[in-house]
Length: 87
Image 1 (cartoon, helix red, strand yellow):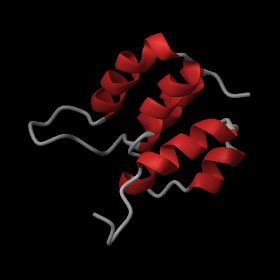
Image 2: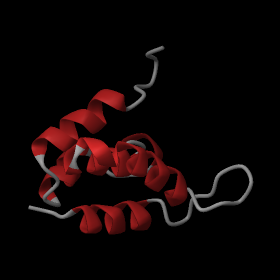
Image 3: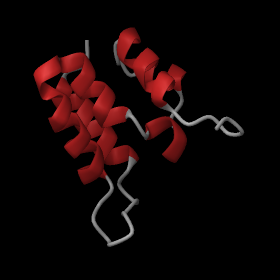
Image 4: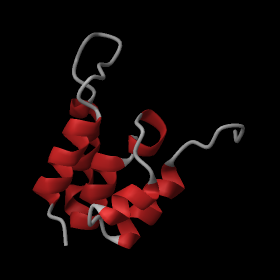
């Protein structure tokens, strides 16, 4: 199974070219979300690191599973992903 550090590296690579509106690397946002979820365990930390990956990068849920991300983490990421056309 993939570790939190490996998921962090995956998120950093996936969001590498992205910055927020004030020029801060976008990965800092997902790391901040993950840090807030740390008291709730590694699955939620991983989900926090990956929470924007499906909507903001070319990664898919299937690719996350193939990379070794636990199925429960992928389910959480899918659940929090904004779907086009859904309010």
